[in-house]
Length: 277
Image 1 (cartoon, rainbow, N blue to C red):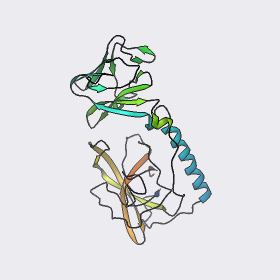
Image 2: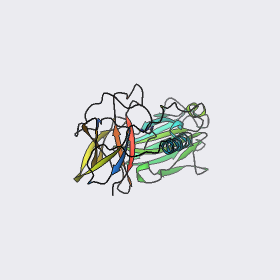
Image 3: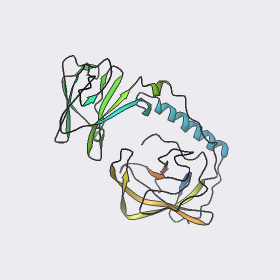
Image 4: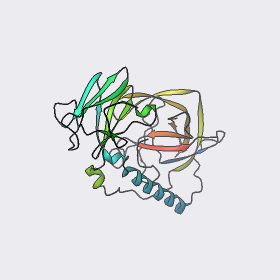
């Protein structure tokens, strides 16, 4: 999951739109606590220890900063190149299909060869590409959807294969990315427990399949095992959940409100909750 700001701080929308069950343009809320399925969706606000809640969120924020600023954090990302069938040359020269401007690379360091939905690196001698600290000549690459991806290195660059909606691409990190070096943290709204609700989980039998458009504009299928329901100001609201992996022990919720893109993250708000028993 991408790193996104947890939704239990901040300002909730005061003019929310009702949830449309057929879409993921979800309504408003800032935090949900799942309750047993037999419990009514009354929007009951549980007793919350404000100090404990603030401490928990501060811990989460610190961990988020640690992740973002790590060698594998989002602040190191510098490029994403989708591969075409056949050879995809890469290097410093602008004549390459993938231009990676780093002094550690040769003008043309080699090619990523895409064939039959598999990617093989064919590096030129002296191209400046290594794997596990050793120079690389030719190597079959594992994509991130197949397990731990094969990570190649050149100077401060790290690159590896990702798969999204059936498309294969090269994602590039730069450990010296200025966004990482110059990062000064985030500004937050004050922590509030006003939007912490008990909610009822309503399972779907069978699970539903939802279409989600990712940040790259690609449509992907997602499995929704059910929805959480709660009431606010006398109205019932419904949020679809997503199970990202069959082995997961938590559900993912995506929603937006009228602050999205102005006071909060433009893509909406993201929340994880434990799997209901």
